[in-house]
Length: 261
Image (cartoon, helix red, strand yellow):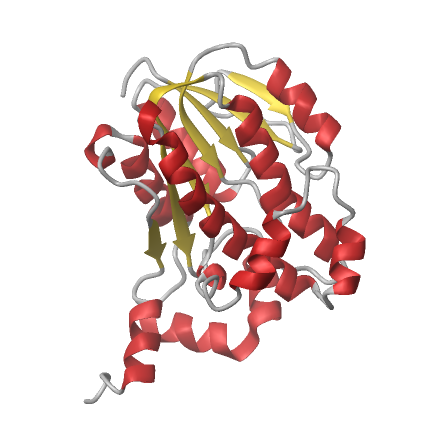
């Protein structure tokens, strides 16, 4: 991987900061994008507000080098009153940035989109997901939320459902160039926004964490992202990897009556 160029969004903290650290340690040149400025473990910083199409256009215009790895990590938690912005940052802005960088992505590049276990039910919600996917980059997400009765929790879940569905939809289009779209879906992660998730998902989240022993840390998730960025994952296309310490397995076992002591 040495000598390659990676773009990492959400680089100022949490999983994004850990990914930048790991990539840099492998000799990869990292360009970091975030709304909060940082210069840790990156060669270049570019300010980016994923809720603002103009900021996305501006940031993408100054990236002129070939890109081998694109890690879309930036996102907002399910915080009250932010539903319209959550849809923009977590999906619409991420999609716009990726589309604008496709020309710089080399053949064989890897795109890793951070989703969430909260997006696991995208197939059950496919009609609303498709409706959301149909929105353009300048869409009025305030109106979309009002029309569809979407609060901050549903906005978060929908944004992650959309990132998984979109990554699958882009897979066939990208095969000719060998570009891989994959997603990583963490469960609870001990970063600065864990309290937002605990507040939003309440007792269920607490029980899940207790059953697997602890929340993930940023390094747990970053290691999986690094794997998807490397050549060892070159035959993985359009998959979603759940990184939750076994939470999904335990929940499935409960539902199917498999967890019998």
